[in-house]
Length: 281
Image 1 (cartoon, one colour):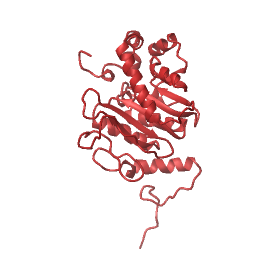
Image 2: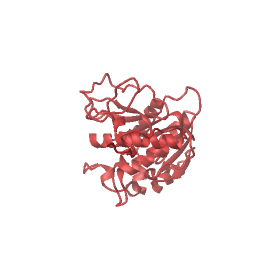
Image 3: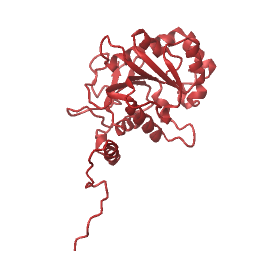
Image 4: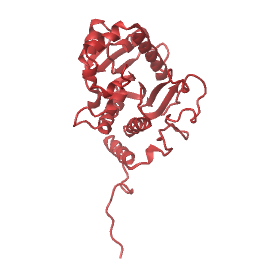
């Protein structure tokens, strides 16, 4: 892009991905090859059972290029996208997956436990922008991740290839994923290459997993200052200053609410519940 501006700064996604832009995803061989490569890597990070067809969700499916790879691998998929122009191209290409027009920031409209896994290519960073006065990036990310967590089978994974603008954006995304109940972390391929570097957010629903290693050699935290850090036996997010995101008030309250919805006992006597006590005399 000649101006060097990020696409999400130019227009809302449903307007940026118009008919002219959508055609590139069916005519530009280089763009199609890159999309296919990132899709292949995302599926690899899902760590699906070998030789077993799975039911997968493709968030920000666009013209269906990622879906083509899923179909080639023998999987059944559903794609969600906010751009009618992109979905029209997908229909013209006669992709095998089912297509849904929808805004990811308003949540995923699927029943609990529907999907075995989820991939998303170059879409998640769009939720970090407020395109309307009513848009709150924090709230939209939380709504998205909460609904996605519900729609995944327990033990399922979600892998997002994204282009984070800065470390603050990474922290915003990962903190909202954790609030929704996910564990996991950021995998960075080719961390020391400015051109080849790719970020993949790998999330685990309902069960912690082993975070895969990034491609391109051993990358230390010093090499990748914007990488989300992990510590402890249980994989968990930490923010870029090194403080565990699970220790905050919001996370505690959200955890209690999830346990109440599950019908489980919740202790009321904590510093966050503001339970009234009798005054001492």
